[in-house]
Length: 346
Image 1 (cartoon, rainbow, N blue to C red):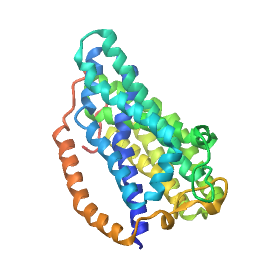
Image 2 (image 1 turned 60 degrees about the vertical axis):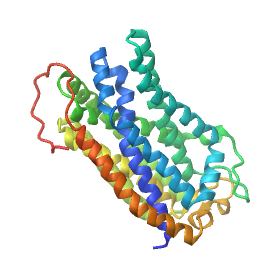
Image 3 (image 1 turned 90 degrees about the horizontal axis):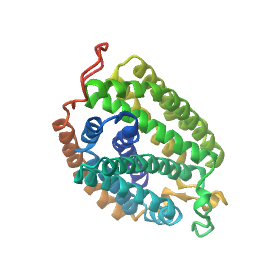
């Protein structure tokens, strides 16, 4: 396997890690107005993701850095063509970050409500645009013979990419609800379980529709054979069905595992359908960016491979330790009667 292919796979893994970890963060933010019926519950929800959200954001920095180092031409074209969309994502992420810090500065109801909604808007808007952006890699954008983006902001939106954005939002909301069932107790935990059950149906429908559409787009616009693109898509459908069944059966641990797998397989389907291209041209297939015409030199790839081999385990160990330290459930009010959860401890 060439280093170009190795780094394409690593970039896909990094995107999967970001979506997996930041996905439930975003999901909790989406659920704040729904489950946070009083200040105590809202504070508990903020506390549930408070120790980990900033560490989860590191994955976005890493995937950006890895793309720049391994595929500079892809990075340049993507960031110039998607400039307004990425700038809007950055603004939404900044607003969301500020909401964590500023919400605690005053005790007024209006002040805290304002920052709650700021967090929710950022938590809905950023995933939607991330879904649109990644779907455009496969669907294709206008590129000329010099591989320069010739479209505008609105060229990024079509039926398929909007479906991708909506599916991402619903999947993250479902993922966040299952996360809260593991991190909270009492009435808040019960509310999160009920939200997971309600979200399981739209997340399943949107997720299956997106995975099926992705396979069709990969075959149609990227000249891919049905195999192997169908594999991660099929496993993704199975994961969504498992999440749906586990949410209905109140098996919280397994529901979280299933939504996590569905998130990873969402990304895997996109990148399997994309390979060996990294950005498809909608105006002329020959203008598409590939792993070969966008990669750094062989020596540079060797150097960053050594750096990644050293640093990645350290990052994983540190983040794993963080989740271990903050694994205890948080109080959410008096518990309602419930069937004991026989799911595995996470």
